Image (cartoon, rainbow, N blue to C red; front, top):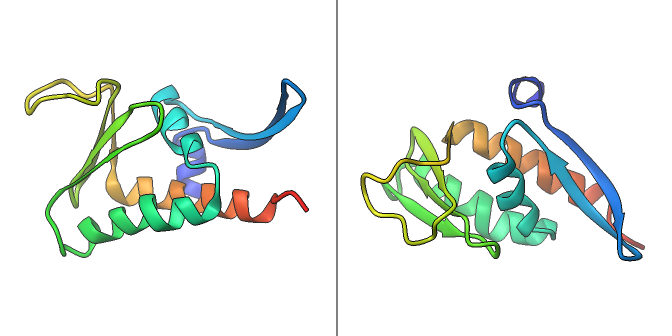
Length: 121
């Protein structure tokens, strides 16, 4: 999984905002960062992001769409995941970011593991 870290220049960290320690990430795509950091509990990452990705990667469904709290839509197919900053995107809209769905899964697993390993006691 180290490959996706280098490809997308990913780092995970904690930052203090208004007296609260928040988990965050940085990558080559601000849209990807916003989307994943909306899922700020490792169980949410498992139950929503990874399970939806697994649905399309295993061909149980040909397409899934997720909309995050910050209203970023991700249209996932077995090959590609397209990110749209407009949750009401229409077919043919130009995506703000595109990533292979297998890479998105790897990054989601890394994000989940970061959240799990850095839980507040």
